[in-house]
Image (cartoon, rainbow over the protein chains, first blue to last red):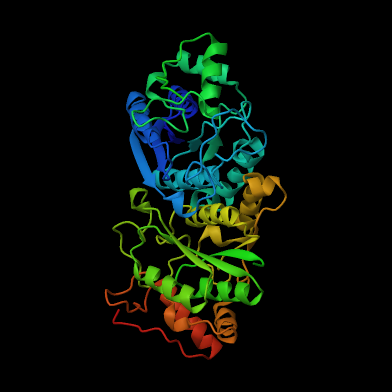
Length: 225
Length: 225
C-alpha cells in the first residue's frame, strides 16, 4: 500500500499545493476536512473538488461546531474586515484552530497507520496567526510523540509543513508546476452566496498579490466587493 | 467575575473530583463535554448531572463524530474487554483522544478568557493510555503557549491535572471530602441500556477497587455482567 499521509485540506490554495507535493513525494493521501461552522461554507465544496482532482485515497469530513465556542469573526456574527490588515492578530483568528485540526489529523493518522501529517501553514505571508509558526508545529510534534500509542511505539507521524517558508508567489509557482487545480480552490473568508470571492478580505488580497507576483493568471471568480 | 477554568467533564468520577477541586480553589467553572460518538452514551447524561450538581457557570457540549476515524473499541464495532487488563495499550484507547479534548478546551478557554484548563487524568491507575502522562501534559502546555493568541500575549491557560499522581482510593477520599456527587457519575465503558454499569470492564474494576480501598460505599448501580 506504500506510505500514507493525512493531509489537512481546507479548500484553499495552500493546502492544495501542500497535498500535491505530498502526492508527488509518493504518499497515498487521506484527506481531512473540518466543517467547524465557518461562515465561508463554500470552502467545503472546494475541498471536495480538490480531493477529487488530487485522487486522494479517502476523504474524511469531520464536523465540530465551533459556533458554541465563538471568539472569531469566522464563526460568530462579527463582520470580516475588508479594508486590509490592521496589524496584530486579526479577528478572523479562530481560537486554537490549528491545534484542533492537528489533533483530529493525529487521531486519523494513528487510526490509518499514516507516517505523516501534511499542513499548508505558512508564516511568510503571516497575517498574525500564532498557530502557523514553526515553534507551534514543533510543540505539536512533541504532543504526537508523547500522547499517542504510535508515539510510544516510536512511530509518531511527522508533522510536515512544506510551505512554511515560501512566499505566496512561490506557492503559486509550485502549484502550477505540480498541476494543482487552482480553479477549484477558494481562499475568500466571506464569499457571496453564489461562491464568488469578495476580493477585499485579507485572504483574497494575499491570493491576488501572489498570482500577480508569480506572473500567473488567477482563475478565481471575484464578485463585487 | 473572578478566575475562570475550563474543566473537561466526562461524566466519570475523576473529572468530577478534579472539577470540585477547581471550584473549591475559587475558579468559576466552564464545563466542556465532548460527544464523540462513544458507545457509552450514558456518560453524557452523567456529565450533565455532575455539571448541575457542581453549579458550573456554563456547560458546553461539543459533538465530534470520531466513528468516521475509528481505531478504538469505544467508537467502533469491537467488543469492550470484560476479563481484566491485558497489558500494554488497551483496545479502549481512542487515537489522540486527550489531545483532541485538550485542543477543544484550549479554544474554549481562550474564547472565555480562562486562565486554566482542568483535566482529571491519572497515571497511577494508568491502564496504558499514553495521553494521561505528565510528559504529554507538558508538551500540550507548550502547544498552548505557542499556538494561541493568549499564549503570544503571555497568558496561555495553564494545564492543571490535580489527580495525576493520586491512587483511585485517594481520588475517592478527596471526592467525599469535597462532596462530589459520585452517584451521578458513571465510569463504565459498556453500560446496559438502562444505564447500569457492567462491573467487569477495566473502568468498573478500577472504580470498585478504589471505593473498596478507601473503605467507602460505591453508589454505582451494577447490572449483570
